[in-house]
Image 1 (tube, rainbow, N blue to C red):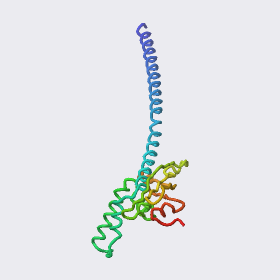
Image 2: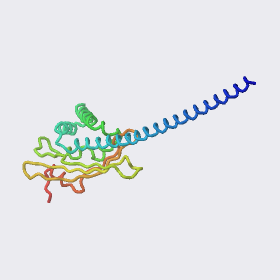
Image 3: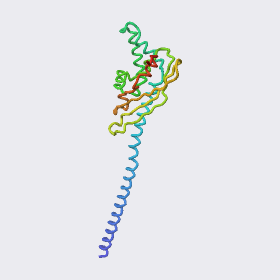
Image 4: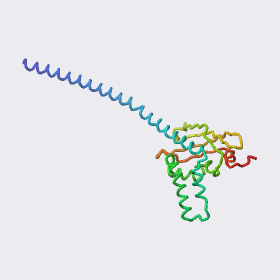
Length: 214
């Protein structure tokens, strides 16, 4: 009888011990889960912020390329590509390829392949640089810019852009010109897919081309 009572007590102690262990493990696992959830939440937010910052930097880099000029090398390559009388000559093709290579080197880090083609086809690529004449003494300089992401959740890849450009020429006082537009990024490639940018009027183009404003 003594042995049976001891066995029952021992069984009770073992059972109580197991229950205490299960409760302790359960609490530990619960705490660990809470810690994981608490730490992982900010990572998603940080990734989103980082992506937005990256896209804004891409836009700012494109504005620097577009709105500071003239780009003397581009003008030389462009003149050579459009010059000559034999458009199908080997030399002509070589010049065209050099210009194409230069533009890709400049802008493919920022544009998708299709985006770059679209920008060139709609005159959104070097639209002001292309208006300078060789050896021009006038110049443009980016003074200020503002890039704002769309507030619409489903359009987070779209940005509204404003820029202030200074035009200088030996023949006249410096003048400021406001430009604005929109940039849409490819969600797959993280590069510019569409860009629409310029002035409501053509005052800057006229000054670069030395046209009369009358």
